[in-house]
Length: 615
Image (cartoon, rainbow, N blue to C red):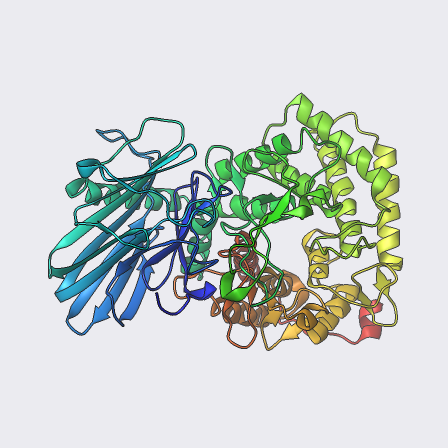
């Protein structure tokens, strides 16, 4: 089947319920139906031989160009070969506009056309349900009704206007030639609890493409960002929308599992859930772009998800707000680039992350500031969260990055407990949250500040540190200014930023998330790189440097503007699950901060000597 695709080689398509990854070779190598966290139907991104793939393209070498149709998640890939040019358009149809016929519950469309000359086309359809555990699923020829695959409760149907034939080793195959102006269409549909709908091909397929294009452009037309980074911000907004589960409003961290942080390593995790950690930054990004409805739906989902587990808040929930604490390995899969094990589920669900309280309550505060409504039970739950924080904030926890090495007393966790109480007191002042124990919350907020400023500060290093009484730094300490604990211009934050750049910096723009990252072989952490730019934009350094750092980080996106969780420092290639919502949230947040700073430009910033700053 050829060279294994890199993580960096993939583009995403989606419909707000599930997504697919398509490589530069025209191979659809990842698709989970009917939801993000269901078992894969195609999983070649995790095992090229056993995972399953659906490839459409020329059989030999080609020069490849690809891009999304402007302001959409409709992917267009062009293959230039000696005899001509082939175009493949991939999409998951949107259902936002009324049509005159029934729409499939889940569908992938692939439209193939010859733009120039004459081109040979090869099609390989090789589904492998249950993460490739089913090696040769039974494909039934239904004639005009297409090829059917039934697995458990899922019925998958492939229809095409070309002749597909079974292969001895499994799957279907076709090879044909197209001349300039000719096109062919492929429709893959799935249903699990409703009658199967088989949309017609031909002109109807082109109608789906046009309708989906209009739907994406209509949604993106609501974006209020008007700064100089329109292309990058709008693409990031489209990524967030694609990773939002429409029926509930939950935003999953990534659409994939077990794409490695270290090639050939074992740091391979399942990210197809909604991380509470990401909530405050995600809510701010959505509000900042003008997507009030999506932000409110997300915050409401957060409150509903944490309702059943209160006052304990879980690390993450699935798209319906359920807790998934089991993790299992899939030993039959080789893993991407031999990175094993492949995991499904995530044991981080059982960890204690005290920072979660601050992130959720900060997101709620954003909603309240914009006039959002909270019902009586939600207000009671917020009070319980605050009371719980006063009881547990001095305990050790696993922290924001979820290491599996035990609990520590993390400075960032203390910061977010401080933020939780601070925002609850703000809500009380706004008369949104009556009846809280104000004196108790004020007392614990001040105790937290004192502990952070004494034990979370290393006087010898003149920097805040990762753990109380410690001497290491982490990139998340830059968020102390973001959450309002310190001003970015303060002498303490200047010292912290300087030490972070010294110890965690990679080149002029990249940051590791912690000091042990290079030792573990990790790449630079995507969102941390954008935190660096945003810290500078918020007053932590010269505006010109903030913009330069931001611009340099943007250059590490792949050819269609997508970022993974991490960046390989030497090549800039993506590592980890892909695309990563958290990284794109960081891009949006930094762009908004830069635009705010541009509109309120301060005199050129010049660092002062420590002694002058402290007076």
